[in-house]
Length: 314
Ligand code: NDP
Image 1 (cartoon, helix red, strand yellow):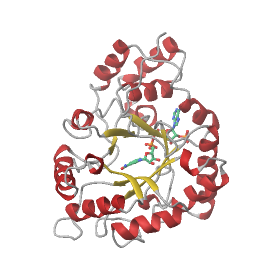
Image 2 (cartoon, helix red, strand yellow):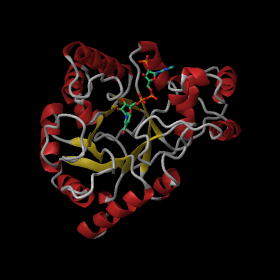
Image 3 (cartoon, rainbow, N blue to C red):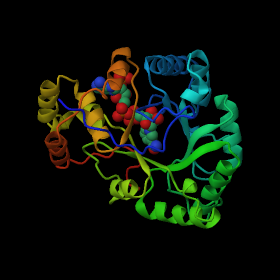
């Protein structure tokens, strides 16, 4: 079987030059978003350390996950050098949050994140979502300008977003151009969105727009069809195709979904508490799915719709 190249944006790499690869998340396992409790905290550290020791080097967190301290501890316990890691966190401006927020603005957020994560730079900071309450400051424009400033100060290597629609991206893209005299390195670099065969467009035209504009698309929830479909709908369309492809390529259904995501030019952010699954998630770069099968996942997947995050906002 020939290995299909996975074309992710070449501009993303760790400081030491390792090209960006599949990411491990620390968000969906936190039971209480106000704060990871003590017992949960140790298990988040252990899981992340296991992922780092197994070969993950791209770590996803966010202020609202409250997992900065756990990420810091896992990084400390792992043998990885900081420059070989790609550490991403996400920010929601005050007034738009549902958790006890510590930061008071973007600059303060970046400084706090650096302190909590025990690092002197962040590989990327993403604005977590574009759903800002109207008439509240800072608005989207101010929040984005603050992130541009944080990058200018060298505290952040890349600035990006999450859950943004095409119109939101166009808005901040214009701000970047004006504020930086058209310096392309200040354009939004990443858009992290919900993506899987049952939600191929989180918002209209988003994947195509990002890919045409050099914005790396990251997928959260890439394994959704395996475990987030309601029990009463267990005969959803991929229940036939995934086992078939799994047998054809001698890979697990999760590996098929992760490889599918990569072959769409999208970088998956996944997570697991189980050693075997963590290892399997990294074994998706030594095989490829025929384009006809990628197309089949697309067409079978598009017959069923499932959105599990930010429901009712798009
Ligand atoms: P996935 O779709 O990869 O789902 C992970 C879940 O899948 C885990 O609960 C895991 O359970 C299960 N799983 C892992 N491997 C397998 C397998 N082989 N077979 C069956 N189930 C499996 O990712 P998430 O939706 O959890 O999101 C990943 C990360 O993305 C988050 O941690 C967070 O960092 C980020 N995120 C960002 C959002 C945003 O708004 N920007 C929103 C949501 C998430 P188990 O532990 O039992 O293996």
